[in-house]
Amino acid sequence: MRTYIVADQPQLRSAIQFLLDHQPNIRVVDSIDQKKIILAQIELARPELIMLDWDMLGQATVELLMLLCRSKERPSILVLSSRPEVEQVALQAGADEFICKSDSPEKLIDILHKFVKEKTNL
Image 1: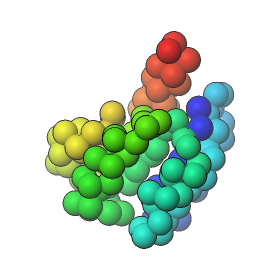
Image 2: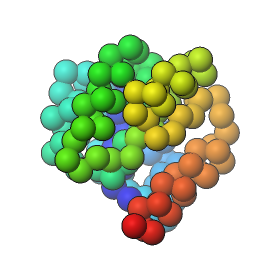
Image 3: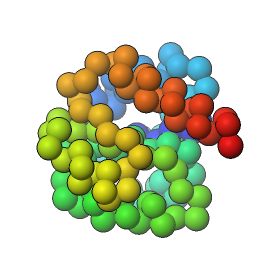
Image 4: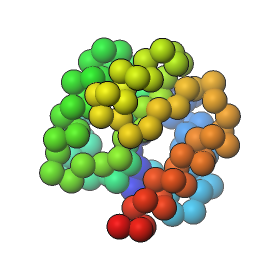
């Protein structure tokens, strides 16, 4: 599964990259930390999954989610945040899943495996 990481915290990107590098059927195609060119970069990479850090963009994440949901080749979207109270807003805006940054790595892996299974069963 082609995965794209959108996060502005280098430690978070590195941790996710490390975790994903050890998962079968998941390949990180790129990551980005520059707010201005996110949509263009994502469209070029054509990922199947986007891991989107809500805390990077805040409320602007809602607009990005709506744009991504309208794209021709809509990727699955996993929103990460340190604020569990934004979960419902993220899901209503189009995120497929939400995970809190304080959740265990095992929970993230379970969600990722669910995405892989959904993509391979299509």
